[in-house]
Image (tube, rainbow, N blue to C red):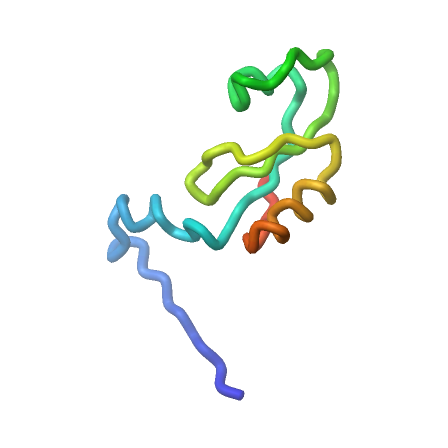
Length: 88
């Protein structure tokens, strides 16, 4: 089995290329507060304040889903053939 080495040179990556990095392949899970939900998911029903939730976002930042468990967000990513990563 051969090993692939990739060297990242930031100055050679355009802003546009960076914006599309991971598109269609990567999604990220981010913990959010219920107070932040209206900004991320305007169509969501009103949620009680003070709750810890998890949002799944496409690589470009587009919100995909909201759930009360990190595991459910990751499962949704996998079911849509996306590799889930966490952000803090």
